[in-house]
Image (cartoon, rainbow, N blue to C red; front, side):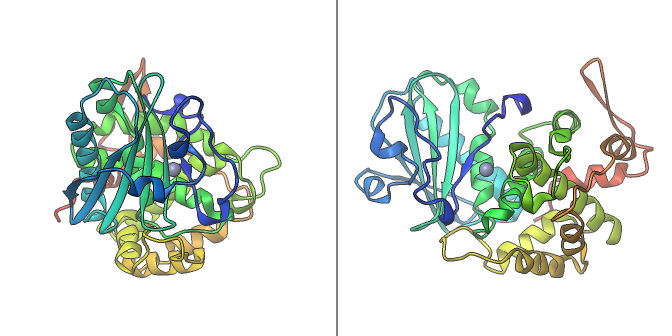
Length: 329
Ligand SMILES: [Zn+2]
């Protein structure tokens, strides 16, 4: 399930957080669960490759018991990587280490993305996790989406998380893993958590959970709609993000840090607009609050009795459909 369960979405660890204790789960193999991805420890494990979208996942399992079979986990990773490759036109990096760490309990519990010595993702999987848990999981796609953006300053963590939050469900619809109704209903329910609260000083200066994850996602949705309005619905945020990736803006290494203005300049160039730069100027240091209810009406999304309904006569209905349409390449 999405949303209210997302008290901790993911622990994206840019280089500046090195040494900060951001995660310390209990009773799991300690050498694999600290705040730093232990590349040396990873190198002692046997890896199995999975190639998707031109990228290779080198998957390793830390010691510990899992109810799931390894081949089921490999299929889940392949499916997740496929959705990311559909959205970005390729898997974002040539190779990524993926470390599966068994931990006590159910489900896929958390993920962390690293880029210190090559792209790497650690996923903590409950020893009792089931195939149904993997079917519903969003965390693997979320983490893999982080690989498509260079390292950013701590004041722009909202951008890294916002992109991952926004792209993950859209990529899964484009890859026919989710229904469009499901993700628009979730956005309608959850996105308001990203609106500014009293005392807000803009996205760059308000590092709360809501503003980092959902505030960043609001930025992405507004950017997507504006780019589509300005390009006759031919291009969207997807093309801007692909442009950033194609210009070398990936998370392969932490030294590949880009100033946010460069990210937006390159993204804007890909769509021939100034949408990202202009929206950033509007939202970076002011509590800009869009009228989300009006936006859902314009997009033609409503929820009654838990049922998501689309209105295809709404003014932005074509944009709503284009956002989740499977790309032709
Ligand atoms: Zn994240």
